[in-house]
Length: 492
Image (tube, rainbow, N blue to C red; front, side, top):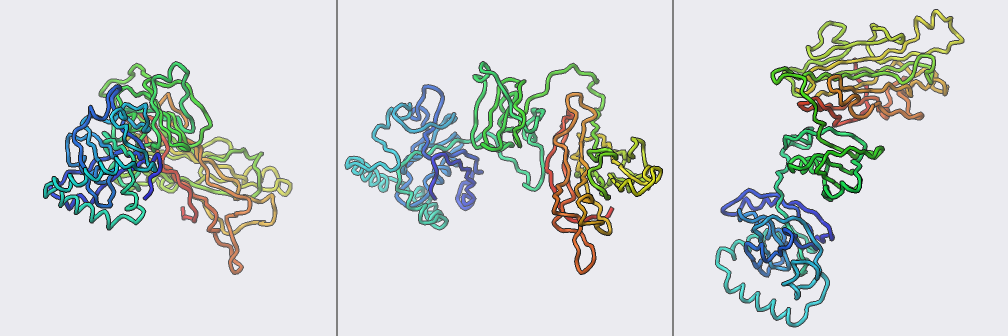
């Protein structure tokens, strides 16, 4: 396996379970063609814990050196050069390109880079060192190397084995933050692994002035969760910016004020502003959010004729029961205690509808009194209390009518009249709308219906359903997660 110049790997050597004196594998950040960088002014020689020759077998020396570091509790990282594995006793601060200007190269002038030919002296020295190593290794190291080599040879492809003769630097940095242990299918807040609380400004990046740039650190190839955890565990970090396109994470030792807007799928996170406490320590936090499903037009400006209906269903994740908040349970007076439901008509009054529903007629064929009575433009609103106690799951479903009316008439594309889902924070003065306004997709040429054997059926290509999770922290600052769009048609 060829390693690129800036490859980052995390090794989880499961085969160590078969070796004696097992120690739980730790997490490393590994970069090929890089030397380890230590505290300013110090070289690797000043940080050496132990130097190990890894033997002559064709194997993955980086994996073997990782194992050696795992077994030694005092090891904070390692550097591999050819078959030489150098374990270090002090923290690796970063990575640097091999070169004559590096502190680590002061005593390594005879070492060459990948691709450079060996000179005769180096070949003689290597042969001498290998003979000495073969003679002096004790039985335990021989057996361990044999087992590691055998297992590695089984797993590696020929390209991996060919690489064993190359002599280049690789640096491994022991990571101090443990990886999350939750299942990938389970949504969790990015701040679960630390106690620091952030406010998240989505689709933006943090903007700083020139003087502030000295108080920031840049990390490459970071996920959003890694960026969040890094800032969360650094005591001085008060803001961070994560770029989804470049996977670049910048942490700041101050609370960033400026923002760069319209940066899709990026985020600027910062600790909340300090405010005077308005509630006593024993007063229970109020955290109320609302979800509104509403059409983005009034009755006079409906863009098409026809009818369209979507409805809301709200639940709490991992709650003590599976109660559902929706129009159906509101009509039978069986709503859960944590929710309130309201349906609003086209005049802004509380109505008796059961969904976000629009029905628009061609006015020239009807009297005004009939239009006033039968044209509909309803919206739905749900209030959820104690939103910080459990994750709130908000779903919207599309109602499929019996048939598609006037499918050939461009004025009757009612499948395009889609309501918008807006979620608001009603308890935090620092936050109004939570995340993006959502609505299910709609395309001109993808209708809600198709005709099969002369009968109207639901179009499997029409995605009329959406789902989103709302996560609120102990300060009732909330964010959207796990947004999904899906097809299919449900019964109300």
